[in-house]
Image 1 (cartoon, rainbow, N blue to C red):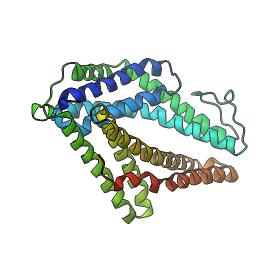
Image 2: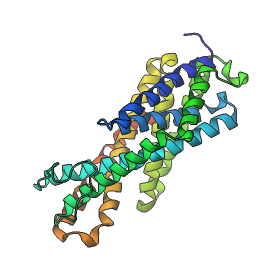
Image 3: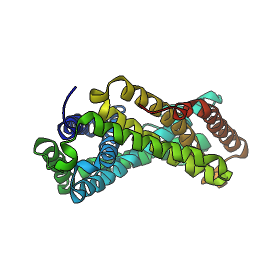
Image 4: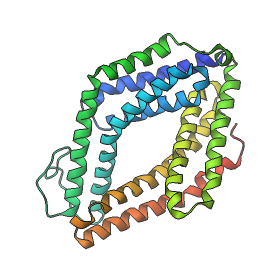
Amino acid sequence: MSTTAGPALIAALNDDVDRLCDAEPDVRADLPDSVHQMRVATRRLRSVLRSYRQLFHRKQVTEIRDELRWLAGLLGVARDAEVRADRFAALLGQNGVPFDEKTVPLGEKSAPHPDFGAQLIAEQRARYAEGHREAVRAFDSRRYRTLTDRLHTMVDDPTLRPAHADKPAADFFTSVLKHDFRDLRRLVRAEPALSEAERVEHLHDIRKAAKRLRYSADAAAKILGDPATTLSKNAKRLQTVLGDHRDAIEALETLRTHAADADEAGYQRLCDAEEAAAAKALEQYPAAIEFLRHRPL
């Protein structure tokens, strides 16, 4: 396909803007997975604008990315609580402790309960409900409306830097993917030299770099075809492996803040399960980084 970089990227961004705006009514209605989908659309847009920032004037893209970070942060409060509630409910079920949705319904605060696991779930679902309310309130704010207006203007009447926007799309997109690929590979190569404590946060940085590569490859897929699609799939696999690891680590941190309130046996059982989940995720890590040994395109 012969086209220039500017129109090709705007076409990809237009799809992402549509995903974000289309998700808003679903989040308002609190439909299943809606917060997650809108958060992903927000993060995807922010990531693509970072990777392809040379096409835009710096002030324009920086301001939009800052506002997307604000929106993703709001949605993240609800989404993170939702993930933890689901994890704890699943772990309790696996450990033979019954969980009754009618007893601890989504988003409702309950009175103190003698069961440590039920208290954890109730707390996280209460946090989800409050986070969801905050996000919906934000949708009615001038700040959110200004953000969506700017996103639509960006794709409907883009102001691009001709020095980069007029380059052949295949060449420009390839250079961006190679840059994001090298950033990810550099982080992975630095990982073995770190201490165990440093490694946890470094793996999180690797995950973010993998996600950035995935999204930049997705934006290039219509131009570069199968090589970009394959690169996206490989980056997504690494992102997923390290995402599973991160979810277990953050669940452990939540558990440890409640150590004083827990019965010892129940608390230790949940901690053991999360430690096992983190270890299991890392077992897949060597295979997930194998693609970094080869040329990206």
